[in-house]
Amino acid sequence: MGIPRVTVVVVNFNGGTHVLRCLEGLAAQARPPDAVVLLDNASTDGSLLACRTLVAAEERLASRTRIEPLPVNIGFAAACNRGLVGADTEFVALLNPDAVAETAWLEQLLQAADRHPHCAAFGCRQMRDGQPGILDGIGDRYHVSGLAWREAHGRRLRDDDLVPREIFSACAAAALYRRAAVVAVGGFDEGFFCYCEDVDLGFRLRLAGHHAWYVPDAVVHHVGGVSSGGPASAAAAYYGHRNLVWAFVKNMPAPLLACFLPAHLLHTMIAWVRLARRGQGRLFVRSKWDALRGLADCWRKRQVVQASRTATLGAIWRVLDKGLPWSR
Image (cartoon, rainbow, N blue to C red; front, side, top):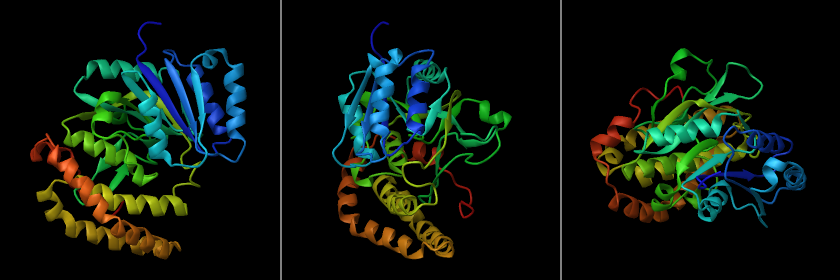
């Protein structure tokens, strides 16, 4: 097989039958992963036992898969870090338990990594599982106001979606990272627990001078939100809106932070109205209150991040979205 190059990390939490499909997709890869690490965040749905049974019976997985059960749910970010630290390969790929990779997925990512040595993160073409032709996303976009979203989420596939290009950051539901680069910037911020942790990591990689690349021929089919209850769940609303504040405050260079803080506050008010209309207004307020309570720690992290920044202000400005974000 040659020198081991890539470890695939799957973080499972009550993934049900979806995580079994995820593992079957990994077993069918044209370029098999050198190692697979499945970290189980204290699942209660029996999926851990089901994974063990599948791995033991699947020859293509049995010899290269390590399953690590965790005593409590430590969150997606912390579990990913355990997988990153435990890997000894040049690359680490992350794959959500509710994502199924097409057979060329890993092969295409590694080929792109060889072609683009200046890039530390590689995003995939994520299709909505069970909805032919509908995208789940093609990488993350980041607005000057601190709003982040998955590009092309819910949109029908177009010809331009098949063109490789630079993106702000890779969505960690299915992505490849240069392990050394991720470790050098501190890995995922475990305080985020889940949601927006990949955008935060992508921003820090940007500040360290790295780039991210979209690989349209690396395709996964993603259900989305299986572990959290869905994109409109209380967990998604709370962690997503709390963590948007921390990612903005921690990573945005000072001139841009000062300039676009009013826009960030305006978007906060618009988001509050939207969530209030769907009965999550109080939850939204709690998320922002907890974000404010954590600002002192966030500011300490900011000082470390900004002190080590090597990217120019112009380089960061170039990759930020500057359109009107209010429809997001």
